[in-house]
Length: 382
Image (tube, rainbow, N blue to C red; front, side):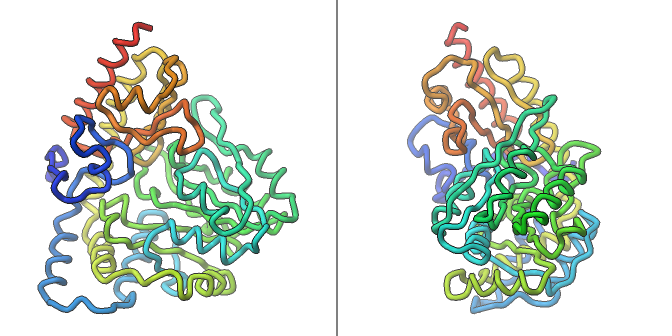
């Protein structure tokens, strides 16, 4: 392996959002979804070259950047898009909030797949809409969207938008073509716009699984938008670069208009880093997927041995969604933090009996996390 994903990098002096949460405590943070890896060297070099130029003024997305996005999506997902379909945003969180503003009026209903990460859960209420939860259900060891609930709530005339996460965060499933066609059928029948947060789409870990962008389903291409970014894949989330892919011109214009005066441009280094990642980060990306799969398999093997804890192997993402309801503890988050491990609290996703662990770190760090969990588990004397 040419990339040293085993390197442990001290982030404590860098004002890291992830690490500052537990500053001064002996707690390993494995919560927010940013990785412990350096991005590809080509990305770092591109940023250095741009800063060496010395001028960091306003910069709009440019042709070669948009072409790199089109080429990456075609290569990775067999979806052939046009540059005109791309709308740049400084993160997917602003993007799905813009979607609420663009396609809904105050008082409308927005369906949201649950469990889901906190900013997505908050988006409807932030835009004066009512959130309607569409559960994910565990079927034969795999998390699936509850299609019956989707059909029921989509039929409400006040329901205007469905926001889903594919691959699922935190559950980790990758939706099949049949599932996506069912979602498309339900949304189309009820005139509901589909907004698909696909930020983890380039992190497919399970052989044989593939990501299909929602608008690539022909039936719903003119009633859907896909939200993507290089941020999770290449660990450049702090640069705030993402994009919506919106094939239909009317739906795209509604999105652009809703963002006017509120959503800022993507800053120049985010644009530069994105192009370098998509053009030159392919080999790094392939090695990353191998490393993440090994970490996932290791964590699954260790967690599965612990009574009262269950982990479904995620098809994608670098996030493990762990059912801790069998531990018999009052506060799952407190159990982990007392062990010296800081996961994302399941209660923030709507499931207090769960915890989400980010395994995008050096194996030695993950082994330390596992050892701490095992020790705390042994102390429970189940």
